[in-house]
Image 1 (spheres, rainbow, N blue to C red):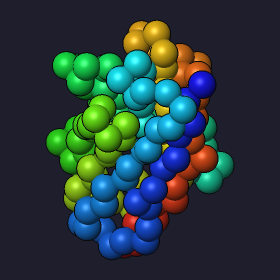
Image 2 (cartoon, rainbow, N blue to C red):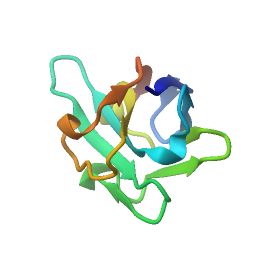
Image 3 (tube, helix red, strand yellow):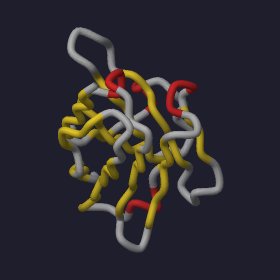
Length: 124
């Protein structure tokens, strides 16, 4: 199975940018559709973005469209989430997730493997 480790979170001000990374080990990342989710305190885990195995297709939740970009470097076994124009409401723990069937949508149920998360805090 694949192991996922997120990094790149931190404390930033509104309007700043961050790039999150999700490094995979144990399996080749190109075998998986990848997604990013986030969870704020007291809220359910929320879909953010996903990318297909071959990076041909990406999809974003409406609240991050135009600000966030998901990408992958299969040669480096890493998926990224570039976050620009951050807002306080983006504050959450961000998780990457892997789907071996390349069919998962916006529900966490479709993803079999998860990282431990990285905290993103955006101050106003």
